[in-house]
Structures are given as structure tokens and as C-alpha cells.
Length: 199
Image (cartoon, rainbow, N blue to C red; front, side):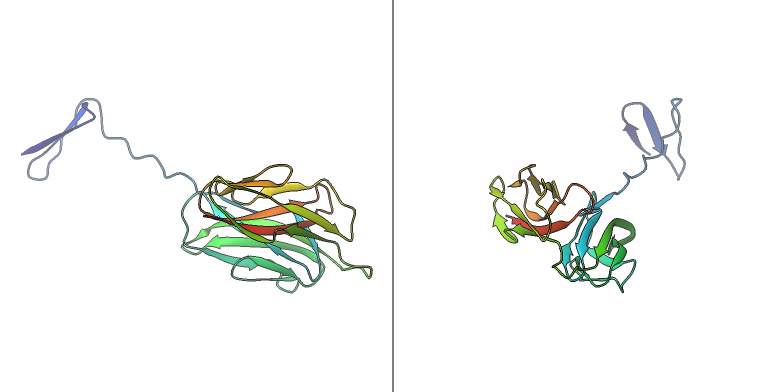
């Protein structure tokens, strides 16, 4: 016969397959696994026909990769890496689902505007791509093209990898890739993106 004591309160004896429990009761079931959430962005962005915007999805659990899709493939296209190209005016919902867990998904809404004859509104974020070390900082700038320069709303799509200040100064926090977005704070929320690799 073997005997084990669990937490000093509950003993379980096994003899020919039998078990016994102490007066304190049975072992409670394990707690449910934590829910998995997905954050994705840029959120509620606006771009013009012909423009592109890089999206990023981040999960609270490890995923093998992302499967990207659009609610309307006539209005936009999307690459396997999450780069959306606007084709026709209208509303589009961008979705990313984990390749190893198809029910784990994130969504973001995108508005596509027709390009006016005078030139399509756009946001240029510089540097477009960069590499920094953990703890190092880099300053991003944004330029409004064909619309009045706003006070930019800066965001990092992966704040565990890199954080960004209200003035566009980004700091690497851990190795990985983060997409940075500069958006107009009010509608139409024109956005531009850049990427940073933290090493």
C-alpha cells in the first residue's frame, strides 16, 4: 500500500484500486484555464483607395501564427503578414485568427475612402522600419499628406515588446517585432504605420 498526503490535509490510500478521502472532503476540481484575449490594431483607421496599412495581432497566449482575412475582399486585399491594401471605398473588418487555435481571433474595423482628384490623404511614419536593442529608444515622426497636420495619437500594437510616448519616442522592452501607428485623433482617423524589430 502507498500513501500520499496532499497539502497536509487530505490523504489518499490506494489498495487494489480503492481510494479513501479524509473528512475534509474531496479534492476540488482545477480552476478553468485563463481566457485568451487578442489585441489588434490599428483600430478604427481610415485610409484612401490605393493606400496600405500594416496590422498586428497579439495574444495573451503563445500562437503558432496568424491567419488573416477580410470581410470584403472586393474593397481590400491582405497579405499573409497582415498588410492591407485599399481597393474600393467602403467599410472592411480585418480579422486575425491563430493558426493553431482558429477560435482565438481579433478584429479591427477599417474605413476606405475614395481618393480625391487633388491627392489622397495619407500618413507617412518615419523611420518606416528600424532595429533597436532592448532598453534603447528611437523617435518616430509622422507627416500628414493632403490633409491638415493633427496632434498625432501614437500607439504600439505590442506594448510588451515596445512602448511609445505621446510624442512618438519608442523604447524597446523585449525582443520581438512591434508595429507602430500614428493616427489622427478624430474622424476621419487617417493612420500610418511603421515597424520596429527589438533585439
